[in-house]
Image (cartoon, rainbow over all chains, first blue to last red; front, side, top):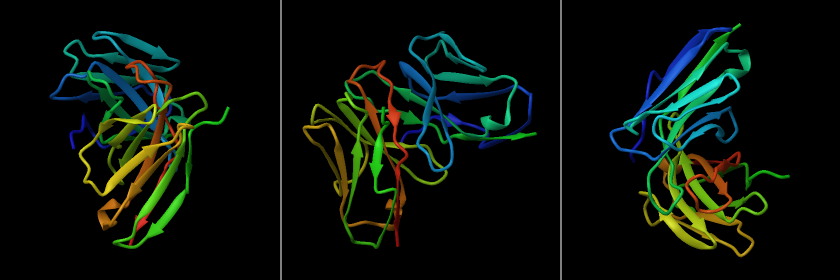
Length: 112
Length: 114
């Protein structure tokens, strides 16, 4: 099935550093979402974006909806150990259902 | 308030068997979606139900079926299990069917097919 493009597969950063992740698609999405998944749990919504160009923050997290509607990025500032996990982007296209298309995810490791 | 609950937590089946997974949405939520997450991949959309009617279906074979009950809980059924059906099955609950409605995921059911 179609998936959004996220790379690299893994990222390793030092505690206190900032990190950016981006997500791209060949298709237009009218909603972009960023989720975090911890082992043994379901994805938890971090940030939702509904308009092209929108920039939204949630604490140390900032995400933007690309103006082409084919990409989005997530920035985490001043990383802490609990930021460890898998970060997924997801997009939703125009339509009557709630179908989300996910990327493969980026595994983030934070060194103390 | 309870979040999305799924049962069972883990399940082991053999090829050719059938399995039923269960999901209870957040109280007041009327829409349930099912996703399959294979190890190392993002979730893949299987079905969405809203007010007991199928609203969307992903690219999965007819061996996969689902239904939603009057209390908005849902079941996902998979027949004639294959090794490739081994995955984490996630249920997501949404208040309604609007684009801005947040999907809240349950912890998933880990299915292993031997």
